[in-house]
Amino acid sequence: MVRFVIDTRENRVTVCAEPGGQVLLAREFSRRWEALLLAGLLDESKAGRALGSDALQSLVRTRGQASPLNRAQLQRLLSKVQSFLDDVPGLNARIEAPPRKQTVGPWRLSIEGPVTADVDGVDGRSAWGHPALVRGDDTLVLQDVLGHLLVADAFAVEGRFHAASEVLSTVDTTRLTTEGCGAVLLRLCSWHKHVGEFQVARDCAQQVLARPSAVDAGLEALARFYLLRIDYDQSPAANSDALWQSTAEAPSALSGQSSDWRLLSEWHNLRALLSRRRMHALAADATAARGLHELAVRHMQAAIYSALWFRDWDRLQAYVANLAFHLQSTLLLDGVVEVTSTEVLRWHRLTMAYEDKFSAGRDSAWEYIFFAEFWLDHQPEQESVPVPDPLAHNLSSFYPDQEAYYVRALERLRECGDDRQVAIGHSLYLRFAREHLPPEAGEAAIAQQTEQLSRLLGAQKDDSLRLNLVQEGYAAHWPAALRRKPRTTGSDRIQEIQKRGAHRAVSDKKRT
Image (cartoon, rainbow, N blue to C red; front, top):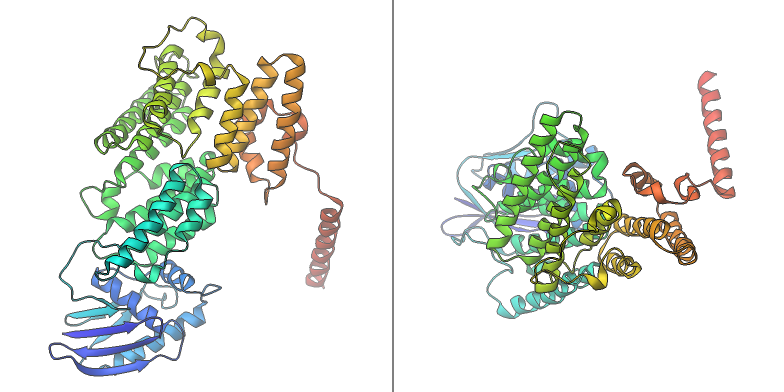
């Protein structure tokens, strides 16, 4: 047996013969990332997989590589590592790639005979095959990491995701195992996603994919699922068709396990959301729409079942809120699904009851959006709704027929929502002010909300948020000036003219 002892930070490796520990070869690499590439290839080889280009690029990026490695750099790296492997006495190891893909991968390390690897002090010979949070058995380190997680999670429970991310980013990840890093990175991924920092969230998930875990295969599947969920949250309308195809299989098929408790309920939740959108896209076909409604309810029931078992009140409330919103949306499908506004109202009240009884949902404010949309769409039908049972949450203080409800909703959205959610909150407030406030109070509220929404849209890097909100129908109650694409400023106009002039010059040069 051959044992590789790799130090990725010092960029060196020692190869020993087992048993006995005789040193066969020791080398300090001269090219950056050689030891890291070798460790990645060995890690994937142990799991029977190839090392993908995206995983390698993410791996070097987490260690400080400013820009992606180009093909020439990859070729030199691979050649250097192969040359080292060729020098190991008695070892027959080859880095293999598909035909004509030597510089793009994926790359598989083929080795004859058993090997083990000790990477940065973690001994691959250990027989312990279960996840751990920190390296070794230092309980002081474990306590310190748990302390950071406690403070960060406490912020996240309150929806203070920026503060939570700041705390967790100070954890020394060199003391964590692969699984511990995965737990930290996927928390950060979720929190950045919540506040609309989608690219940062993707980077966190990619870092997990770059270092697969040998004892927690579900981490990789979870990271891949997060990438899908980020696509949905960033632009549900634009990405729902593609996600309908890419999420067709249950996550157990992705992770190679019978099930994964972290994944399955969230997969059911996402499939329910996608089923709702598909139901409306196929509303002209009553049979298809009815089948998708039934599918959405089945998926939501499965998600609710899982949350009940784990007494996860936050997720349970989120799933109940999503089901309330789904039923609310079926009211638009005349005669396709038999749901009444009274039934939907009871689901919304049940959603708010979880907040009242368990303080659930403090990290989200979607339920305020859903309830407001329902009341604004169906307010005339709710005049004769019976008083709910005494166990339900008393909503008299924050019922959507009061302006205080929208003020509270925006406060919550600013704490824990992304820019899209905050913009939806302003849009609903504008609609309420137009339709239900007295003229004088309504004009003041409209002016205030228009100014704040205009400032939010103007702070965006591009026009995608405004366009998405227009596409989803939220702009119907905006003032006309907000619905139009902003005019370019004088400086923008000058830059545009300069670009056109440069383009003409290039075109003229090509013609000559």
